[in-house]
Image (cartoon, rainbow, N blue to C red):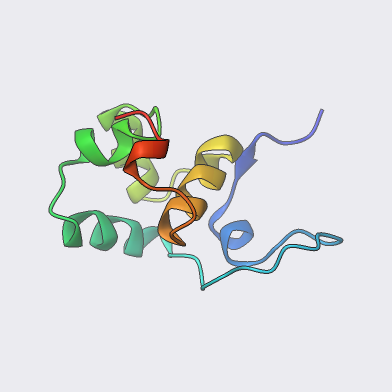
Length: 89
Protein backbone atom coordinates (compact mmCIF):
# COMPACT_ATOMS: atom_id res chain seq x y z
CA UNK A 1 0.00 0.00 0.00
CA UNK A 2 1.28 3.46 -0.85
CA UNK A 3 2.37 5.82 1.91
CA UNK A 4 -0.63 7.92 2.94
CA UNK A 5 1.48 10.68 4.46
CA UNK A 6 3.14 13.61 2.76
CA UNK A 7 6.42 15.16 3.79
CA UNK A 8 7.40 18.81 3.51
CA UNK A 9 9.65 17.97 0.54
CA UNK A 10 6.82 16.31 -1.37
CA UNK A 11 4.69 19.45 -0.94
CA UNK A 12 7.41 21.46 -2.69
CA UNK A 13 8.08 19.06 -5.55
CA UNK A 14 5.61 17.04 -7.63
CA UNK A 15 6.02 13.27 -7.61
CA UNK A 16 8.01 11.75 -10.44
CA UNK A 17 5.89 11.14 -13.50
CA UNK A 18 3.12 13.57 -12.61
CA UNK A 19 1.91 15.99 -15.23
CA UNK A 20 0.72 18.63 -12.78
CA UNK A 21 3.06 21.56 -12.16
CA UNK A 22 2.72 23.55 -8.96
CA UNK A 23 0.95 26.88 -9.44
CA UNK A 24 3.12 28.55 -6.84
CA UNK A 25 5.79 27.31 -4.47
CA UNK A 26 4.27 25.35 -1.61
CA UNK A 27 4.58 26.72 1.87
CA UNK A 28 7.17 25.25 4.17
CA UNK A 29 6.13 23.89 7.53
CA UNK A 30 7.10 27.18 9.21
CA UNK A 31 5.16 29.13 6.60
CA UNK A 32 1.96 27.19 7.33
CA UNK A 33 1.71 28.90 10.71
CA UNK A 34 2.58 32.30 9.20
CA UNK A 35 -0.06 31.80 6.51
CA UNK A 36 -2.70 30.90 9.08
CA UNK A 37 -1.79 33.87 11.25
CA UNK A 38 -1.85 36.21 8.23
CA UNK A 39 -5.46 35.13 7.73
CA UNK A 40 -6.08 36.01 11.41
CA UNK A 41 -7.52 32.59 12.15
CA UNK A 42 -7.20 30.27 15.10
CA UNK A 43 -5.79 26.80 14.57
CA UNK A 44 -9.25 25.39 15.23
CA UNK A 45 -10.91 27.48 12.51
CA UNK A 46 -8.12 27.17 9.92
CA UNK A 47 -7.52 23.43 10.23
CA UNK A 48 -11.21 22.65 10.81
CA UNK A 49 -12.04 23.61 7.22
CA UNK A 50 -9.79 20.70 6.12
CA UNK A 51 -11.40 18.26 8.55
CA UNK A 52 -8.42 18.39 10.93
CA UNK A 53 -8.54 18.90 14.69
CA UNK A 54 -6.75 21.82 16.32
CA UNK A 55 -4.35 19.39 17.95
CA UNK A 56 -3.34 17.75 14.65
CA UNK A 57 -3.09 21.15 12.96
CA UNK A 58 -0.67 22.27 15.65
CA UNK A 59 1.45 19.20 15.02
CA UNK A 60 1.44 19.84 11.26
CA UNK A 61 2.63 23.40 11.88
CA UNK A 62 5.59 22.04 13.85
CA UNK A 63 6.69 19.46 11.29
CA UNK A 64 4.56 16.33 11.57
CA UNK A 65 3.89 14.76 8.17
CA UNK A 66 0.55 15.83 6.72
CA UNK A 67 -1.73 13.04 5.41
CA UNK A 68 -1.99 13.09 1.60
CA UNK A 69 -5.69 14.06 1.40
CA UNK A 70 -5.19 17.00 3.77
CA UNK A 71 -2.00 18.06 1.96
CA UNK A 72 -3.84 18.06 -1.36
CA UNK A 73 -6.71 20.16 0.00
CA UNK A 74 -4.25 22.53 1.66
CA UNK A 75 -2.24 22.93 -1.54
CA UNK A 76 -5.38 23.64 -3.59
CA UNK A 77 -6.62 26.12 -0.99
CA UNK A 78 -3.32 28.00 -0.81
CA UNK A 79 -3.11 28.16 -4.61
CA UNK A 80 -6.64 29.57 -4.81
CA UNK A 81 -8.23 26.53 -6.47
CA UNK A 82 -10.54 25.95 -3.48
CA UNK A 83 -12.27 28.50 -1.32
CA UNK A 84 -14.00 28.38 2.05
CA UNK A 85 -17.32 27.51 0.45
CA UNK A 86 -15.79 24.41 -1.13
CA UNK A 87 -14.57 23.06 2.22
CA UNK A 88 -16.08 22.08 5.56
CA UNK A 89 -15.69 24.67 8.20
